[in-house]
Length: 278
Length: 331
Image 1 (cartoon, rainbow over the protein chains, first blue to last red):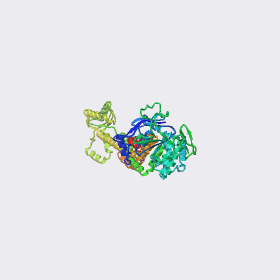
Image 2: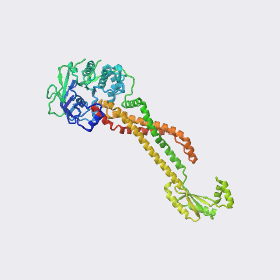
Image 3: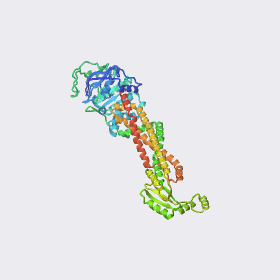
Image 4: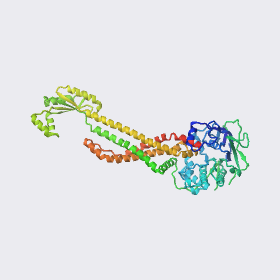
């Protein structure tokens, strides 16, 4: 379903990168993200993920977790290598096609990225409006998504009156409302206490049980202790987990993908047990 | 709450209907744009006032210039040539000369004014008493007969040189004592009209450009203010056109609303100025009537400004797309 083939990402001090740094002057660029000296944020990453799997990407801060997610979401292009999502070569697609592909992905952010000038309902409805859904369908799906995350009664509230955990649940409702095949989450529990973190994780398990592939980037190791999952460990931009498992892509890698001479990794199953179903 | 799994997709259960919200993409963008304008009422009002006041003069010029041109053109009598005949010429000779000249190709019409008619006209003129006293002293009619000649081409000043040449020919004609070409005042009037027209278009252009620059800057600032929102929409799969649409609508709305307000201001000003301007024109025997903006004029102005507003908005946010992208990369 998802295949990274020898993917590297190197940020250069290009004019775009410089202007980005100026625009986000308040937010310092992350370590490993911009390396004017040419230090790669990701280096020769190869792995494949199966549909319906539950995956964690872990690693220290600056290890390349967020970069990997952005590459997967098509928000960035790899410097080298190939990325496939359901037979679509993301590294080759034009931006206009990528936006269409992105409709099949739900993205949850650490800071939830809600729009504070509109209601919870309108925030959750946004992906459906983008993907040209009809009004009735939008109403039905948003209502259902809000029920699923336990916020049906807060549909008309503005995000700023919600707690951190509720805001994150709104973010999750927005991510799943378009029935994505993949749910990407970048430090979704980073700003939450342990109780709320596990509530959020339980939601991800719900969606995974319905067949959605879940990929969570986190450095919160407590999330990994009690659940069955696959795990990718990044260290200094390199895959550093389990050990090489050659040529075990289980047919998920598209036939048209170029055969890589590098070692193939698959997400390493932890405990090997079936995914948790609430 | 139950879930179903079909083809790897999450099927959310259907829910009861919710009160209506107009959720087509364009309707949504328009709704968002209006909401933003209303959310910042004071700023919106000030922007609209600046733009509409700048546009008021161009709107007035747009309405007045055609009327001014019509009045100056219609009230302009044809440049005539007056040929004063020798006093020795009899009326019969004067009529013969008039008939002969009227057959010329470069002359449209010739009117003969006899000595008696000229004297009669003077006796009934505004200074009749003084004229009568003078004539009583002279004892006889001192006035010459005259020919009022209308050159071919009417009031078309492009033939000014031909009129001068015709006047030269008349001066050489036997029986003609003096020739007066009545064209200089018309040339001055035309020059003034051209000056007004050019100045009008200049003001028109400068003020329109100034208004559009205000609009462009407003849309650009609004776009920068919503960079985060654009980034989020981008990450959720929103296309570039989807992200730009609210700002284009903002440009169109600001343009249309400022045009509407400018028409209102122009209507007020022109109503106030209408009476004194008409009185002034009447004193010059012109039938100038201050034109007030009609519905068709308003519709034209609003539509043109909406289109200009959209184009200006496109230019205003042309560079902010990169910043949205940069924000995405740094989010």
